[in-house]
Image (tube, rainbow, N blue to C red; front, side):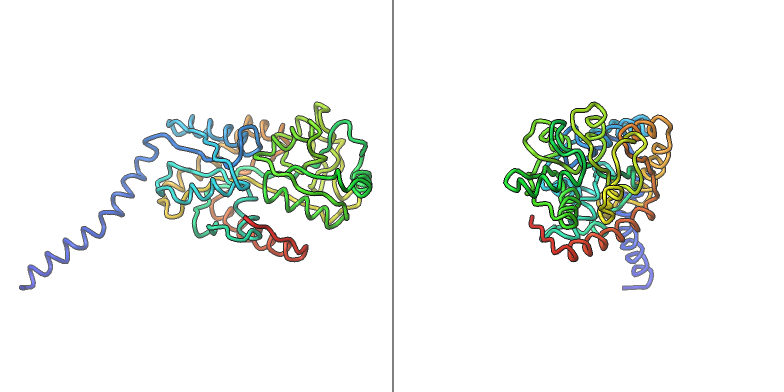
Length: 327
């Protein structure tokens, strides 16, 4: 084979090798050109679902493509994460991931089949929030200490509703620090957990603000504490755990948008830029504030650092508390 033929063959091989990357870049340049699916791991009405629908509508308005919110419920949000991780990395299937499924579960639940920073591309943290502990409006406990005393006196009746590993871990941390005996009752969403407390099916729940704060404000449940360092502006009468003698029960959770790993950087950048802009919109901030939730809008790199740090933190908490979770 002469040198000219060799050069031609090498050039052809090089061209063929570059075609997938070129096709991927071309698709990224046209993004988005079809509907985008936002996958939520909890039932309709829960905190993540409410957040997804607010953000999804804004993305639809700004990107000019339909954004469809899908609820794929199960395993505290982990089933939705598994589903999204297996989808084509093209930016058309995104995950609205809660810290429970994306930082807590990979750290403390045996057998979780994904590693967040390996199997996903974090795009932006969109919301940050503490948790609210509530009991039924007619429950005799008017404070956390009264709840602890009641639970110790009624161990056969004491239980709590939970829909996420993060909520479970937060409640188990409270049990560890207070000595209150309670057994968990699983639900599909935090909205269902709050409804179970309203109906008297569960003693309490420690849940995210979007479905919880409005029920506290309406008087349908009684707010006993928030897991933030300071009281929430919209729930000024609900004290912090610190104020009630439990300074070690601090929990701040988040929701964020993820794509499957290997999604083109250009697509990630487009979504990151739009989400950062959306989360600074005054009407979005107000809607989040009304749910006792802070609109964030981080960069992809900032979000990845938070995930890495919190995964280690929750692993340390579970080890210290000797808590073990199974799939």
